Image (tube, rainbow, N blue to C red; front, side):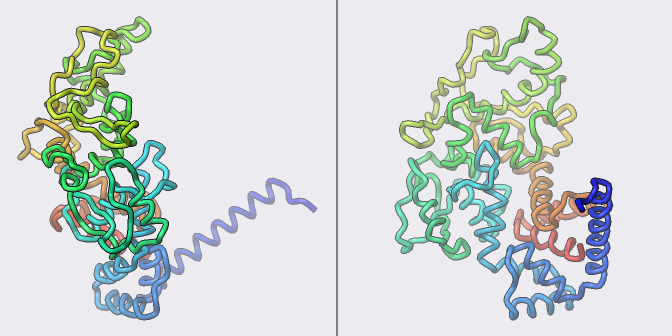
Length: 391
């Protein structure tokens, strides 16, 4: 006889309660070996070998859980599965994990592997490519064949990546390189067509953990809002003053840093025109002819005042500059950047969002340790795994 909806609901509740109680009981009674296995599974995504499990359990028993976590990061799956799945959504507008390996993802993976200071991910002249001798197609600024072949051949990303520079491989002027912002994958996703505001929005979303709705501030002056933004959308100026200004007054002065960049679909590559503003910055310039007309790539961070000052901008930096590199440095030195990386790793390792004050305090502690370590992201994984190994 079919179960009634009420009976099904009662059954589901009992099963859920039973699983929760079993999980709590397991966590409470978990010994070093159980904790080590859970830690390895979450970091690497695969079970440890018997030898690695023994070594990790010994480290946990000795009170060195962070070292046990580091052992788990020696597994190639940490790089080819955990990190790839973490980073890939940052590289495309759909924010999907189902995208091919590319230069953006490979560069982040390489930086984590080599403990490259992660605050430079938005500003360094850096690129990771397949190691010499793998028989891969040459790295090209015009296609992704090199990285797709790496993935199709199952190249071990723990050993198969080597560091180089964008200026050396792609020919981008060193001063115009800005970490993953100027990677081919990011350019294809966020510099293509449009007005280059997409690069600003997705950089903010992926590396500061804030979307535009969360940083709206109508108190900032509107004098650098571009000409393509109507001052009376739908014939109502109140919409501009109470809505549009909130995003554009902060975004447009900073997105000016990208004025010399575009992605050329015909060439399949990013194009940098130093000293010459891209035509896209003048799209729809008759919408409000008295608006700001972009003359160069000089940017200014007007969020250093107002409620977005809470993002924790570095007082040692000027808050203004020219080009993508200096804007990337501005972002990378902020408290929001450090906290964002920690929050993403916490969710990846702990399999949940921060839930209570204890979790939020731990995020703050981990962000401080991240900075103190010289922005080593592996240390964040170790700290998160240690904190959550009893979950």
